[in-house]
Image (cartoon, rainbow, N blue to C red):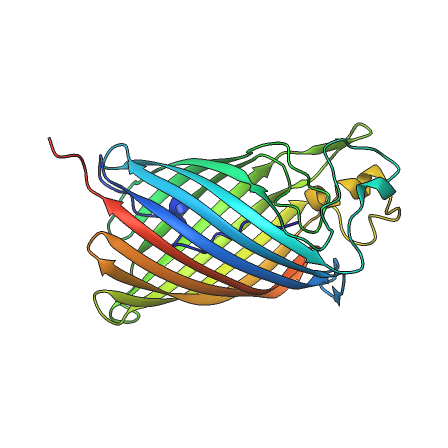
Length: 305
């Protein structure tokens, strides 16, 4: 199962500490490549279950409703491929789900993943920008989720959190920071009358430095902790049960990814970005061997009256 990694653009529009002025906004197009070679048990140990390669294209729009309130919309398209000797095969299960199909067949399969809609409100800009946000992710359609190369978990999620960002010149001249915390309330999965799953805490931190007025570099940290959920392999003794059918939806996945990136102001109305990430810790999921991303953001002014 492939998740959308939110590192393709500076700080992720749905959780930025700064908001555009009324009538202004941005349009961002991004491309991501992810490469997974290792799977993780609940104790963090690594095992081989095949490789997953994904290409992700996404579009995001951010618009200033007022000088303090902004709304954002995003849509990603994901193509992924699984190579290995342990494909997920719905036909081998004891249960039948008509929404599942065999896609771990060594070829690329693609589709639109989860639509994102968010609002955020800037409380203050001094001494730092503080901006609470509310975001909603909804599966675009009933896509298959039982596959290494599935585009997502096919679950809705509501994210509540806040961002803080601003200058870090007291630590290092020409530097900045951005922190974002989100608590994700995730749709539960019911099996034989029992509700499974967990919510997520996601913390992202950026620390950047301006080499020039146009060029900056940053270090990136992304940490996810799942509250609740099941552990692999001990909670899945039967690999043909309905519980196993939903394992990607109900695992207690945790990870820490570290990396960095460059941002460049090509023109006053266009920014370019390039980032790289790698997993350094995790359990119950995939270890990101490499994640590369590129993005272009266009800033549009308020309409001339």
